[in-house]
Amino acid sequence: MNELRKSEHSLGWPLMVAANHADASHFVFPSGLRPRFLLPVDKSVAKVGLEFFLSPLKRLALNYQAFTARLSAATRSSKLVETGNMKEIKEMLSEPGLQTVVALGTPGPYTKHTVLLLSQALIPLAIAKVGTTRAAAALIANEADWLTNLAAEGGLSTTIPRLIASRQTGETYTLVQSLSGGKQLSYAFTGMHLTFLSSLQGHEERGSAFTASEMRRQMERRMTGLEMKLSQEWRRRAKRAIHELDKRLGGERLPTVVAHRDFVPWNIHLSGSGLFVFDWEYASHGYLPLYDLFHFLLMPVALKRNISQNRLRKLIRETVTIGLQLNSGKQKTLAADAQLLAYLTDLCLFYLESNDGDDTDDIVVQRYAHSIDVLLEDH
Image 1 (cartoon, one colour):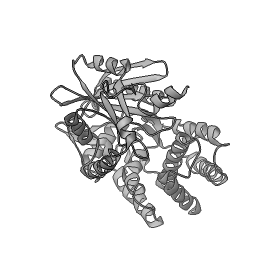
Image 2: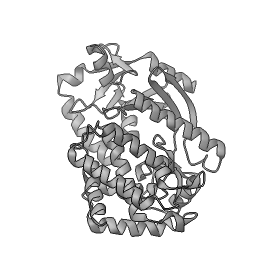
Image 3: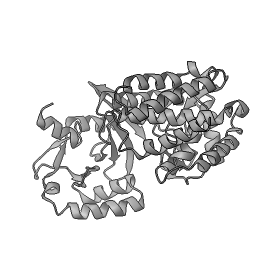
Image 4: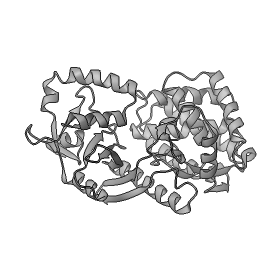
């Protein structure tokens, strides 16, 4: 990849390319340590885009950064214009004059860009996801498959985005989907969440040994690919965790189910018809039944602070109490502490894969690693 292409990629390639001031349709916002958004030069459109993507508190913080960034020559020179790829996305909606706001993905093998498509009246119409690497394209293609399959089976069709269009061009995969039109729920787990998970898990419930599950297969695949990249400490930790899981869950006839695998409050809205769950890129069959519950309850905590041993024990009790209310809840809550170990290990291996084995800069991996060690020492 030449230097121009590298620059294009970092600034939203293949959706945008560098432009002179007169031709520019967008600018980079902010221009600090890492660009976050590609905003239209029309300030009214840019404001709507930021309000869509950011919470009020994050909006205030980012606006302050933007104020200081505007003083730099870098921001003034970082002007962009839409490419033919962006125009093709607009054509998927058959709406003339659409405005676009782009949220840039985190750099790495799973980099993707999210495009908000607005009408001429600045009404949000749809979201497009664009995978810019082979790994990211595979995730977005997986989301398209799950949206298609779940909508066809009914039951969950009103609780998930509607797939409007999808296409693959080379290594780039683009998906356009509907918006929820709702608002984010609180961080509390409610009866609506329970009903949703029961319905989702009802699409596949298989009684099989953990060692034969899709979850175990993916852990093994990632471990094989990462073994020579991991630190000695992480290599030891992951091998010990997988060995413990095979020993403790190998003989259990636990149901394996469909898991969303990113079931967290910020991926859930309350719409007019009830719960609305989006971001299905990581969804998979063949996962342990408490996976989504653990993720919902623990991830918000891990992003804020370290997880104590008492917090882990409380989490297991809370998860079992909720899990017993699922269909076949008694079977699904078996070996809950081992299911927690499996969840933590699986998620860390996924994050480590996305970071090419580097565990030094990811706060979730660091905090989950401590929790894995606590659970291993308990046995």
